[in-house]
Image (cartoon, rainbow, N blue to C red; front, side, top):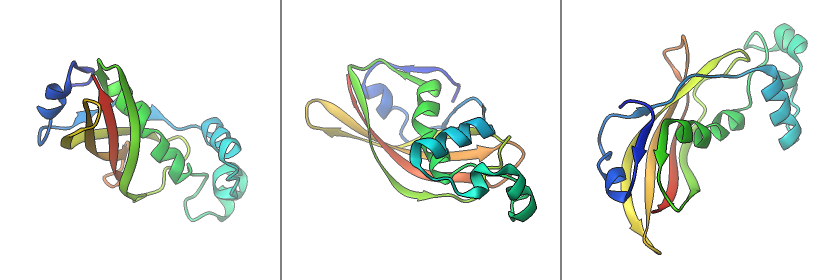
Length: 154
């Protein structure tokens, strides 16, 4: 499905169940972003923040992004891919997260979002399960797959 979809209500979300995925634009992963994530989380493992040592000693040939940095990109990539005309939306959780390949610094990533289910929840909201695949440009193997759960109130 084309980018920049605008969804006005819960029925519009329901219409996406089983349909073609929404695809985000590409997003670059640079060393500054990796360093900022390390500072925010306290995860300063050298494979992420020491490019010289990572080039010498890492099996990846250089620094890689944190898996959780990759995962944390999902809400922002979803927001750039679809506009939900809602009163409020919240991230509700994740299921079955896997980091299936490394993300070398300098990579370009994008996400595909396929709606698996839309269920009514309290206070006139809906809960959406998105099957998310993050891919790295030039690689056939995804870097992350997850079920991302959101709640929306229109």
